[in-house]
Amino acid sequence: MCFDEENLPIPVPPPTRGIRPPWAGPPSNVLPAPFGALLLQARSEMAVLAVYGAHACAEGFGVEVLAKWQQSTQPEPVRQGPHFASRGGPNALRFVIRFADGREAIADNRPGHPADPGRQLPRISFRSGQGSDSEWEHRMWVWPLPPPGPLTILCEWPAMAIPETTAVLDASVILDAAAGAATLWTSGGDSPP
Image (cartoon, rainbow, N blue to C red):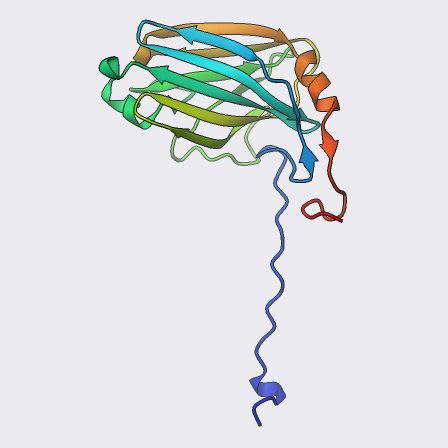
């Protein structure tokens, strides 16, 4: 018989939806609140870096880093976009966010440098990026929210003659936006009720 118990297919469990760890990005059931503003601009004769505020929620906040450079002056490694690293390299771009209590989040997208939960807090996770042969944009997530007080953003891109540049803002801009984030649904965290 075709449908005896021995010939029945083994049931496959339904797919489970993974819940994104808080250091990887905003929860899928939250609509972060924007705090858009130009937070930092650094430039040289060859290039410019701009850091924009994006959005915040109770778990952390997003920023966007935009790099633009003149095609005629670009060194070979720049053709794939800037390379974020905590240490130097041929096209290393340093990007650091320092909290008022002295803790730092350092962007580092080198191969073999995974974003794992064991890394020291705070941390920057890369969400997405796109670009061309003369510009590149990265969306990043910073976790957790900063404490009240000054928040320092630092960048440096020696390959494009951009010296260490810092900007300081009051973390209340981010904390106020985070208070305005909206929880969209509560059942399961990943699907509407």
